[in-house]
Image 1 (spheres, helix red, strand yellow):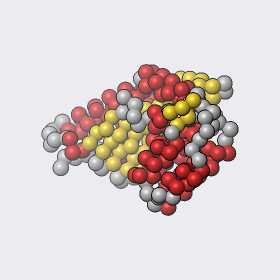
Image 2: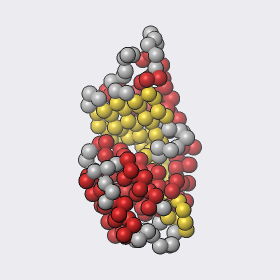
Image 3: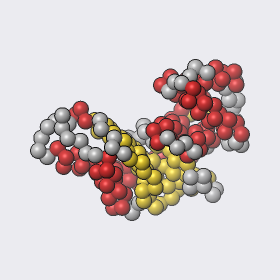
Length: 231
């Protein structure tokens, strides 16, 4: 099996690229086998009065895979969303790399190119436009919850989804944007780095689930409750 860059090496590459893009590394967790890191860029886009976003990059690395995604940071509430379905997303799998003398050099170049792609203005503009659209529509919550709980089973995730729904109900924003912010607020308050990452991915996926104009009734609580209890 080919050598694989350590999480510390990947973290150094990420920090160098963010500095080169005039950005900042805001949050990082890494040990011998896992790295979760996010960086933000300086420009901001306003999606609503007094509600500005910063673009950036989120990177996750293990001893088998590296994922690089565009990242959006909502300044007013310090919530972050990972745009895992963006065209700039890159997945680097260890299984796809062959043994060769320039292995580490090519892998480093691939990581740097992926980070730079996510730093391009186009990635941020597209993500911001999706969030603007999310302010005027609602997500199909039943589909979102069913999809999430189908791959995240157990009492922990059922509790997490219940907390998301409670925060959404307490808020005044009934749009898809409000749901996304309820999810990312739970992520912000979550200490486990892997759980936080998954919740930020879920939040970033909400704009793609737009189904109906804002203001239409949300799913009945009995439907939501039954889906949550699947976990």
